[in-house]
Image 1 (cartoon, helix red, strand yellow):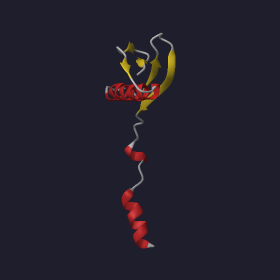
Image 2 (cartoon, rainbow, N blue to C red; image 1 turned 120 degrees about the vertical axis):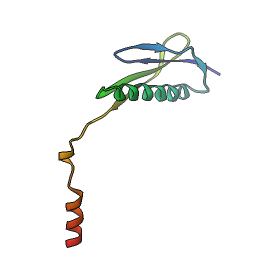
Image 3 (cartoon, helix red, strand yellow; image 1 turned 90 degrees about the horizontal axis):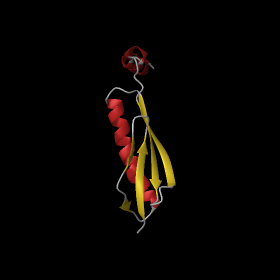
Length: 95
């Protein structure tokens, strides 16, 4: 089975795992994407409005085989912008 490394990169850090054997590079990418989602979610929970993490699957020579970018964001909405749910129900009842 081929040995692949997963590298994650964003504006705050660069990390590379110890590598593991995967049947396909796509399998390693899926694991890396899961990790990147968790990293992005932690940043958003910590107060960031958005976070992006690049995931690279590398061979033993360090060359990238596959790459993806995972973006996580939050868009706060004002309560004042929400439609009045009661008004919608009243319109439906009047019709």
